Length: 315
Figure 1 (cartoon, rainbow, N blue to C red):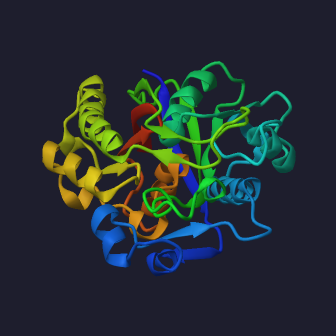
Figure 2 (cartoon, rainbow, N blue to C red):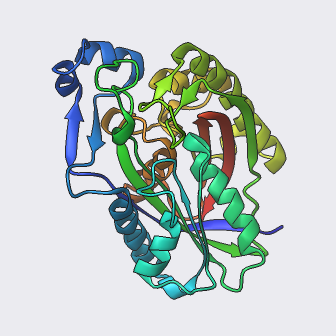
């Protein structure tokens, strides 16, 4: 057995709060319409002068300080994102320079959309096994507000900006993440790229995505637990990607999970894609809802279409 444990978390949210009432002044919607369909009341948006890189640096510094781990001790630095400030250099490489990590630190960005942080955890577990330094800095960060069409109420109400970070440690005696990852190639969620003629805004087939999540999220949880040889009663918190409260509620009912183990923060953050799981992890750790020795089953799902689950234990 060899794997990871979570040492500490960090987070950074932009200063600008966008409420449902704010959006109702831009597009044909209302607070009641948004809340009843998504569970979202507000989300954060980067103001002028705030950036994806800035959010990552703030979250990373917070996590490192809380972990008591210096940048020079990091062996792997991964940033899960699809909205970095630039295509190259990778955000992880910028963090290496700004934070002072060693030049032999493995640094790269990873794009698995809303499943990205879970993918990054599993990737870090594999890379740290061979790294000379056994601490990893893993982030999920997005500035999706850059890609929203504020005349399209089906998408602009959903997404927010933010960054979450985690410092993990690899040891031979630590438990595996028992990660389960998957992909079903689909354009049901599309975020624009740099191709000539590419659309300029996020677009999403809401019903198709809902059906996909309703199927894959409960199945992923069951597969992770089967690999670990555990039951739902052995998990202290289920950390769902905060995409839509209806999707989460459906999975909770289907698996008969205790609702108190499945609380989220979608009401105040909206859907932050790859940042969603680490932002919620940080909130749970900061508030004492997750403590030393406890297990969190993290589940991501989204564009790709991708999904992933991992069982992460706190040290």
